[in-house]
Image 1 (spheres, rainbow, N blue to C red):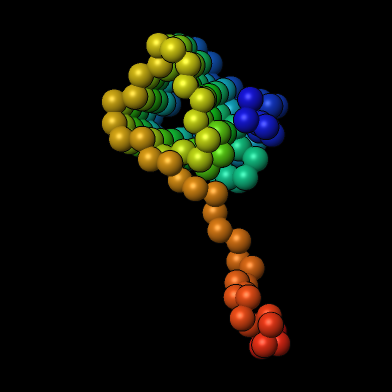
Image 2 (cartoon, one colour; image 1 turned 60 degrees about the vertical axis):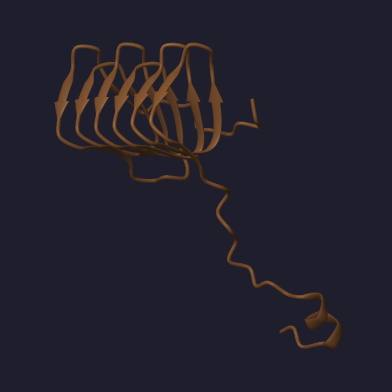
Length: 136
């Protein structure tokens, strides 16, 4: 949906019986089935994919490109590409996203903020600059 081009390969897994105390930094794809008490942050934001399963619990900030939530997150969420909230997904905290897909039953307790696509660093020309030949 929405022309999704997210990385679909999972490189790492936090198992259902695992509990991590402290920040978790990852690259590529990560699936969390257990608990993380700390921030979960993608190192390579462009291709990162995080899946929070229905058994997972994260208490901390989450930052990545693509995020699928069917578990519980208590903390701010920053998704630079697609955020998908599945039916059992729960987020208690402010959410910043570019694209949002929210299924029936999902819950967000916090502020939803749409972050537009980043601006390009290309120069901006005005029509009068081009007509007068002053554009470099």
